[in-house]
Length: 101
Image 1: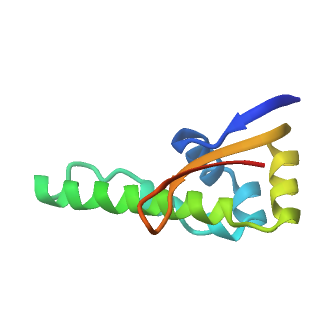
Image 2: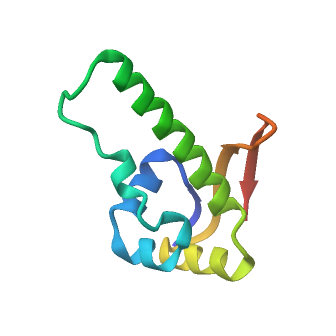
């Protein structure tokens, strides 16, 4: 078992692609399509808008995971085989929050 697992963007993307996580945690349900990269469709401005939307969604996902109840956090730790989880996100006030549970 890992002592500390950091829930960074790549870890969350892996969780989104695993249906076991998507069904267990409502924060991740139906979010995978937001992060799919479109095949060279649209202009540069469209790509910037899509990237900005993806950044906002990732921040929302991290805040949602950080705000889960103790039972869900324990289940997430068990699924990731970790003693502790750390998540770093930006809250609504624009402050960077580092939460370890």
